[in-house]
Image 1 (cartoon, rainbow, N blue to C red):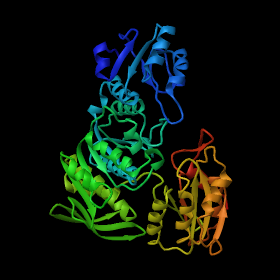
Image 2 (image 1 turned 60 degrees about the vertical axis):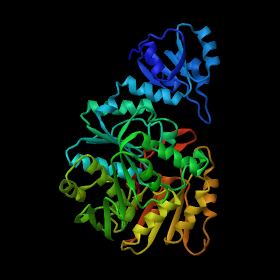
Image 3 (image 1 turned 45 degrees about the vertical axis):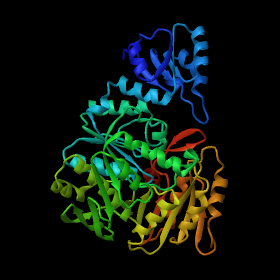
Image 4 (image 1 turned 180 degrees about the vertical axis):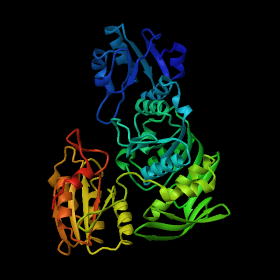
Length: 491
């Protein structure tokens, strides 16, 4: 990429030290990954200040350094006059704009769907990908479940949990175009919005699922969290809003000026579901599309997943897909891996894998499991090291209302002591003597414990963060596979 001084000022640069007429070979925010001719952005977070890594970035070949601390950058220029140093007011905003420019605004060649909300993002994203692909629009997805093109999961190292940093995001968009992908559905978290990871990108459609207090360790107050979520809707052309959500739907409905579809269960909306009935095969319901009604059977479980399906249907309507084509695709819809996946074990019991890792998520999954026929419920829950310690005892309080046996394990311990995490969870059991409790600090062994307790007719429910392909131990991402843990059990 070659830019002129004029271009730099248009992309948020306030001052330039050194030669601005340069050809940029790469964009990075990690000084260890900087290459010859690269541009390095000094990101400042809670734990790190990117300005401390300027020296390392230059040694690795960076030609252009962008940051907010003008005095530091000016001093570096006197030591390294062969490099260019640029000052901006907002490094993340600039990085978003430069990333879009570096890949030649490739996102404009894709139809983009941004999905935000506390719960449901991953499932809505997977449902959108599934329905659009069936309708003949090649669609990829980006988020917690990884990066998928229209055919398969791609091998892409994720540096963040859900929404990639802007250089990575535009690199994925670029790969999509190279692979013949026409549309992309992506999860956009409130943290990603706040950190400008999608800066400089206008999305064709924005979906809001719901809002409950989450990630307050980052946003500090619920109001900040709400404002972060609202910002996304300044970047979208069309919107999809859940009328069942008390947290924010009214605010979006009054503020958003573009084309909009609403969805809801048992509440008047453009796309509405009524008369929900669930069994072990899925959910039957009546779908209302404006004045039309359809009887639907979908291989999905839980009211919340019907709600997620309605959101995906709204997206299809925004794409102009005929109602009959959408209806035909629903019985074949594919959700994300690890979201209520049911396995019939050869020893006569069922295993259900689900990503539920918050008290709210666990309650929802347990309410769905009630519709299954089983002898005993063997439930595995986890305490998470990396976030929300206050939720650990709450997981136990929810678990003991429904299960016959509970196995407690640990996910993503980070630098925390596993024993302490287990103790935090155990504090939440109000009647520890009333049910069988087990603890196993390692997830794989905990799964084996759960399976060893199972007899024919039992239901083994494995919850927590078993998906994503790794566990964070110390500051390392250690490869981990939930399916491999299940398959390696020999009774």
